[in-house]
Image (cartoon, rainbow, N blue to C red; front, side):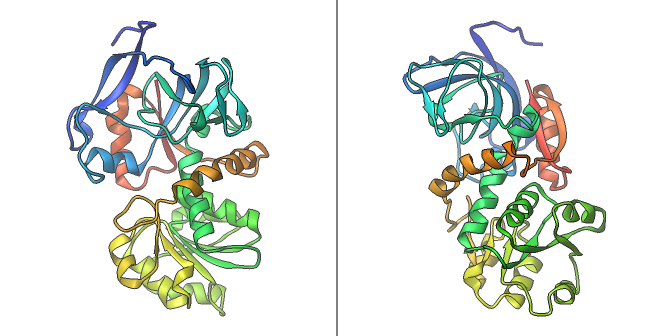
Length: 320
């Protein structure tokens, strides 16, 4: 076990491009606190599919050793004078969430004040660490397809972390939802007021059984050919179909591609602007986060394997 030197931080790094076997924990000198920067003692950091993809080199090569993690929760232990985030001034002792940041999987991080927001009180540190990336992704899906009151929205992968955020935001906007899921995950879809349907052969007919007139929009969180083909079959306007995963087939079909894939719209400004609304909804108890596993930083390899499996049962979170 590495020591806990006050001037050092325990940091998860990738020693090379590859799989979870490349992950290790090292001690690094604490980053200096420059203007407009905030030092956070990390309580929890989320592991997301994007972290797995970056480790695998899917976002281009990074010079090893490189750090991982884009969102975290924790307590401010230092802030440069005048530090102000999207919600206002930031001071030592504040409980916060940070997104989008670099190298969040660590015992301590120094990040721009512009990435720091108040932690919603109803959420634990573990839940809060997983709020903003999936929430901002869900917000982007709804905004890109113009979803609002009275819409009928088909959500593929509704029981996953992004899907759950989508369902909750749809409920806030007064839109109806049908969500695809396995039979064992149907309850997770129903929890947010959506109608669950099983994916697989006959999916289009099962959706029509709920909505004979068909959905007005479709949001794909899984990227399967089935999800995209059924969406195109049921939704007349391909500008109201969006995917965050099926980039190759989505491009062939002419639907909207969102996120970090080839040819996709990253929506950076829109996603950053969504953070305050997401925090507000969580503070009001109207947006929750399901945590599947909480693991110590030393078990990062297991955490990455869980996320790579595609069925982690909720957000996977590392705690220093």
